[in-house]
Length: 426
Image 1: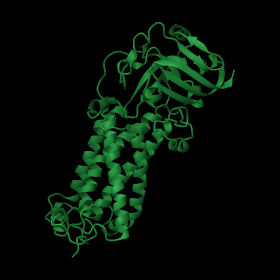
Image 2: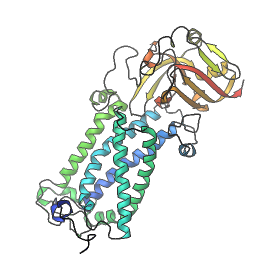
Image 3: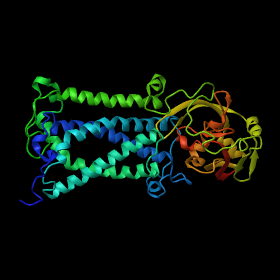
Image 4: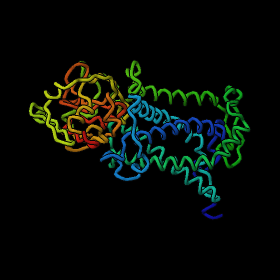
C-alpha cells in the first residue's frame, strides 16, 4: 500500500470516529438552502453598496482599481431616501446571521474533509478546489465584516478593497459548488423529502445510509437530540445574532438590544445627541479651521466665497433624512440648510451634472466625494447648517456638511471646504 492510499493513523481520518446520527446529505442540504439564501442577500446588497459609492465619478472608488468603475457605471438614485440604509443594514444583518449557519454546515460535512485518499478523481479535485475557495472566502468575508462593524482592524490591509475583491472569489466559488453539489442535494430531498425529517422526534431520529461518499456515519451512535431540535437551535442562534445587531439599522426598541454594535448606545442628550462615525478631533479638525474665518468656496462658471452668515441668510429648507454607514448603522434626523441646486445656480451652473465636495479634513476616506446630477438637483439635497433645530456640533460637521437622500454616509461630507459644480451654464 502506497503512502497516497494508506489512511493516516489519526482519529479524524478514521470513519468510525464520526458517529453523530444527524449527519448526512439531507442535513447538509437543508442548511445549504438557508445559507445560500443569506449569502445571496449579502452578495446582492454588497454589490449595491459598491454601486452606491458611484466609483465612476471623481475619486469615489475605494478599491483602487477600474473593475468597479466598469461594472457600476449607472447613477445611484435618491428615492427612497432610506434606500442605502435599507440595503446596507440588510447586508450587515444577513452576514452576521449567516455565521451560525456556516458553522453548522461545516459541522455537518466535517467527515468529508478527512476522507482518504483525498483526491480520487478529477471530480474530487474540482470539489476540493471549490470547497477551499468557498470556505476560505466565506470565513474571510464574514469575520472581516464583523471586525469592520466593531471598528477593529487587526489586519494590515484596507478593509473595503479586500472585502470587495474577496466577494468575487466567493461568488465564483459558490456558483461552482452549486453546480457540483446540486445533484446530491436533489437526490437527498427526493429520497427523504424536504421537510419530512423535521417531523421525527428523538425516538424516531435515525441515521442516513452511509455510502462512503457522504457525511453519514459508518458506525452511528444513539441520537441525543433530534434533527429538528438541532436545526432549531441553529436558527435561534442565527436569529439571536441578527437581533443583537439589527437595531442599529431598524431603530426603535431594537436599538436598545443591539449589544453587538458600537453605535447602539445613546450618544448623549440634545439636538446633536446621535451617532457619529468620526469626531472632529479624530479627523484633525482644529477650532481655528471652523471658526469665524471659515469660508465656503463655490466653483462653477464663476467663483463665490460665502461665510456661514451668508449661508444662513439664504432660503433655508428642512428635511428628515438618514445617515447610513457601511458598518450597517443608520440614524434619521431633521436637517436644515441650503439646497445644493441653489448653490449651483449661485455659482452660475443652472444644470449641474456633477458636484465635487472637498472637506477641511486633510486625508482619509471621508475628505471628499463626487455626486451625480440627480443627487445635486434633488430638492432635499442640502448643505446642512443645523440639525434638529440647533447648529451642527463640530463632531457632526460644523460649520456645514452635505446631506443627500440615499447617499452612503461616507459621502455625506462633513466640515465642507469647497463645492465644485460641473455642468451647463446659467
